[in-house]
Length: 196
Image 1 (cartoon, rainbow, N blue to C red):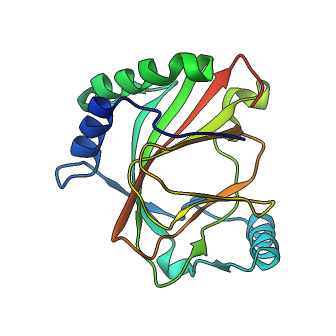
Image 2 (cartoon, one colour):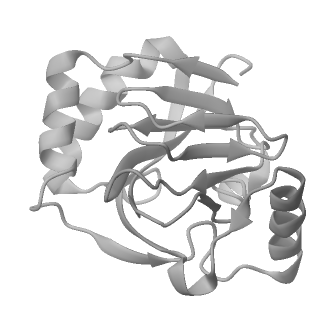
């Protein structure tokens, strides 16, 4: 795992916040942060990891979020956001030694009464027939006490302009925030020319 702070230039970060964190953003309701339908094995695995790390699992009734798939390698760019997504890609391309961009997904998480994990998972399972190892990254667009937890108990707190990068094989889960109404992040997946 690698963590980079201040990854985007200030002007691009401000543009992202203005576009993605304001009232005019187009959102889709996502049911189940980790999966549309959490299978029994995944749910049991999440419960086991959460117990080991002394954190609760989000109740099913609260397991919702807002999302917008800005780009994926099969459908291309959403025209409305193509310019800014390309600017983000260009800004971090060399730092991450990206060969192929797979997906850019914007997520908006809601405040909860205590920290919860949503479901430990891997992103883009089945893409490229799982033949090529790929990398997951999370770019936080605001500060909060929420973040990302990994199966080994490591927690990366949401900090504006922080990027956490890890192999797609690493189980991870969003952790809800308690100190802000919403938390916004960009989750992206890519194939890189270096080991993470």
